[in-house]
Image 1 (cartoon, rainbow, N blue to C red):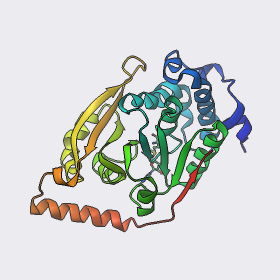
Image 2 (image 1 turned 60 degrees about the vertical axis):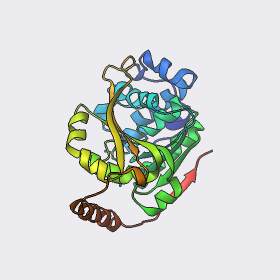
Image 3 (image 1 turned 90 degrees about the vertical axis):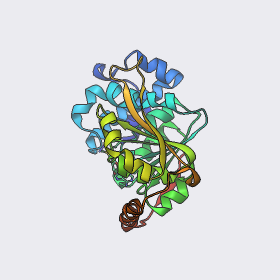
Length: 261
Ligand SMILES: C[S@@+](CC[C@H](N)C(=O)[O-])C[C@H]1O[C@@H](n2cnc3c(N)ncnc32)[C@H](O)[C@@H]1O
């Protein structure tokens, strides 16, 4: 059994392998200490509870914490951000640590994960909201909809992500899907599904080029107002209806929202 105080709240004495690289000071500034606590929480409770693989521990900074935080480069000051499928808090928690000006909501269906998130948020004194549920559920839409930005990492293929992310955005808001080296390929493959879901101006953007060894690739697309969407052909209407039915079948389940201190 881990200890909230030891693992999620107090400890900043990191083993040598978990010491942050120099870039972490540039990214987190005077909140570096909080980022160190998060790193420690992932390496201890995160691994013990099966939220992060033990093999990820030596690369927590470069591959996870910093790679996620640099996506802040794409987000305007004071934006509301919904991170869907946060898991152990990626990218939502690094963004909240690096950018206290953002209003961040983490959406995650699995209780074990929301407990970890809430414990860390409370221990670190962050103002981040955790909503338990699936991004496509009506309760989540009610609680977290109208956002300026919806982020995600390793949650679903692009077409599905668009169906889950776009309804949570305000018109002209942006979905930012963190992807690997296959980002351009995925955009090529799923570009039409993105358009069918109501997205426009899609592009692949690179973040953190001067800060992390492997820059983060992000597929960015805008939620178009209905009037600006391309008119659909009949066959496209049929596909869209099928997709909407499938999303509905996923059903509305209990959604529990909570606001941390
Ligand atoms: C592979 S994990 C990635 C977690 C985290 N984003 C990361 O990069 O480490 C995928 C996460 O998406 C969540 N998830 C799956 N379907 C979802 C949905 N429809 N809405 C919200 N979250 C979902 C899962 O519970 C899981 O925590």
